[in-house]
Image 1 (cartoon, rainbow, N blue to C red):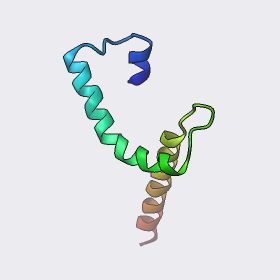
Image 2: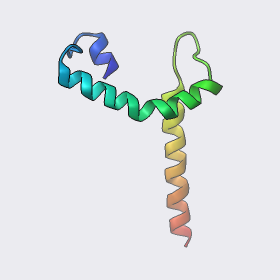
Image 3: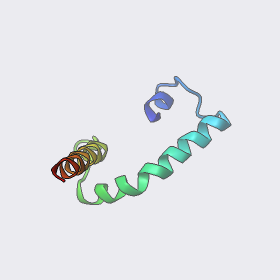
Image 4: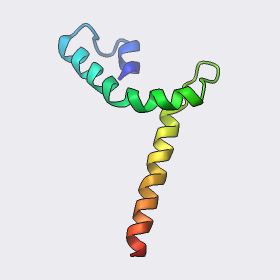
Length: 70
């Protein structure tokens, strides 16, 4: 959503868009903030969302394998 705002595809001054954007930030920022403490941005590229996606995928596979093993 931040890219859509940055490229002016959606208007961030719209009250509804602003509320949605702030809600999304409040949902993911606690987890991403913890990861950003340990992994710095490389040349301005934030890798924390990629790490979260990989961790969630790993956990999903681990849970599926555990359920199939029972």
